[in-house]
Image (cartoon, helix red, strand yellow):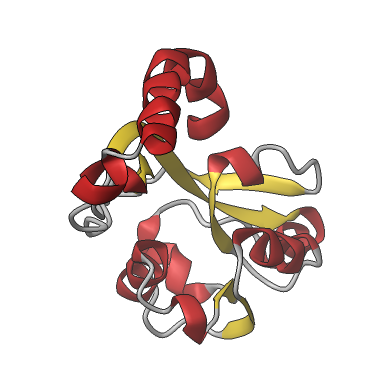
Length: 156
């Protein structure tokens, strides 16, 4: 089976959903360069991705593992910026499905990728002093109650 490495352990926080990630390309890029048909073909493509400010992000680390020698055409500090570079047909991008699937100019070519799940979390949940404040406690209680309605938006 052609499986990528895992993205590793989740960050601290209270998990409320899985953030699914997939590989996307712009329509013109794919028409010109073809679509990868498996993980092994990812290194043959140009990539757009996160810049040094998010170099430790698990999606960046994952891309380095599955396509370590791929050409890097553009970098951004955000998922939306990366999506714009992919829409501009500069290369493939690993994006949350909530972003990639919402862009009509992007085509999902692989995924959701195995090992590409990142926990969507409420970060203050594991910070005991913050969790005890009335505002944070009320917010967390509300989110836990509403998470079922929000899950499709969070997971894509």
